[in-house]
Image (tube, rainbow, N blue to C red; front, side):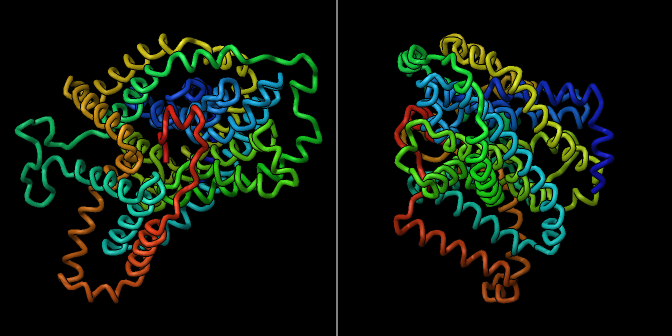
Length: 509
């Protein structure tokens, strides 16, 4: 991989400008409670149609990275994280803000985010290509087993109930079958609508389930959010506004540990940033000599949560680049953007389009540094933005959602699709079904169906022939083991019942 060539393409005023715009939008989106990186990227994909591929992908990556860091702003200032993954940040960040140390907490959140993001991007660069070389040896039988394991793993760890997670994943695969059948070219579940012959588009579906459904849910919680604004004060002492050297000495090991945990969680498909941030916070609290002080304003809690949260974003692209399997919702949504701009995720992209891959890597590294600059300069501005009444934000977000859905196909039908999945998203929230699992199941569905059809032919309709495919058998046992482990009652790490988890249980995996 010629990363130097990538920097030569990216380090131009135009490309850097679009990356900076993406980071700024992402930071704003992350700071606004309830939106999140998945919403920001999904809405912005249609807006990049006419941009240069490097500029477009750099902008979208900037949105994803910026929103992961920006979600800490609302978590610290109003105890309402922009995303569920920043809920651990609120446990210690909000008490610090109440003590007049909001600037200190915001700075640690930013620095931990940038360090975790940058180091995790290096992990992506060094691991994706080697894993892809092994991925070329994986055939349809092995791929089918891996996809089944991914769905089971996601179903078991994306919610409180294994059964509900698997049901949501199955419905995602079900909706992926809408359209022309790949072998016989017979329309399936199109109900005579020509617009459904090409299947259901991911962007209007994601916008409906994530953004519109969240805005409707937030509209019923305006009074509680308004009450949080009145309890913030700002200290005047110098030590309340800066991070002391002693605090850095305590937080550096915490940040490195959080980055490692977040990178590992990101590489494993389906776990997501929420699991990474809570695992990192729990590990830091367990390793502390004063665990009883966590939740009262320990700056190490912010460092642990934010480093892991932001490390998940780049590392979740490792299975996408190496295997073509999305490791998270944001990776699933970025598939549409990559394909739109000529980069098909999977092991062959390193051989077919090495220069564009190098450009993406360079853009990701630049986005990390730009995020540090924009976050440092604009923290006060972003803190003011989240004080805009939510009743004024909701109409603007709904307008952007409608525009984004319409631009995907340039037809009103996409808006109807968005509204349909808005209702489905609200129903899934009400019944506590994982729409994260639903979306990943929808993305995996076509590959799962194709690899399953091919596997039947390769195995000659005889399951005994699996003995010649040890990798597939290994993932089969892992799938059964996951069902048994989760079925025994082992639940994922979940948040305490804060306002964040009440407002948005699961926006991201």
